[in-house]
Image (cartoon, rainbow, N blue to C red; front, side, top):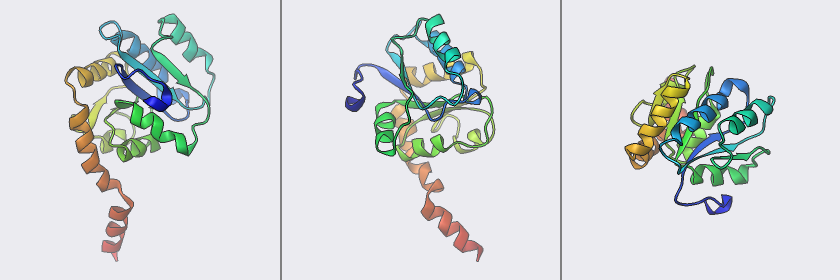
Length: 183
């Protein structure tokens, strides 16, 4: 939090990685507009380069008057800065409209971070709903409800602990052991 000059009294959602239309940042921004009606301490950190036109996203932020709730860090995030973003957030949100897998999920596991993902591609297969986070349909209301539920029920510690256990399942060590069993 200190490295990003963030207020420790706020709650932080992280959207991390290249920004492409299919990753659903527009859904997350609209969900934030719903969330702040009841909780002004929730903030969104967007950390990643645009690989699409940025104007529609900035237009949404302006439309919903979210300037003070969205922190845009749209330069390339070097490896040595990745930890700053993951350590500062309370939850990682991947509101993808379609996907197969995501490297962001593995980074979040590395930092024992709770996640909210959409039920597209293989994301739901590696995020057990209600254990490491929530799996929702890719729409504004469902995403807002899941984020609100996460903060209202104070699930960060529980989900983080489960993530620290489950990440071993995806470790290199575990993969090598599985391959060796095939011999």
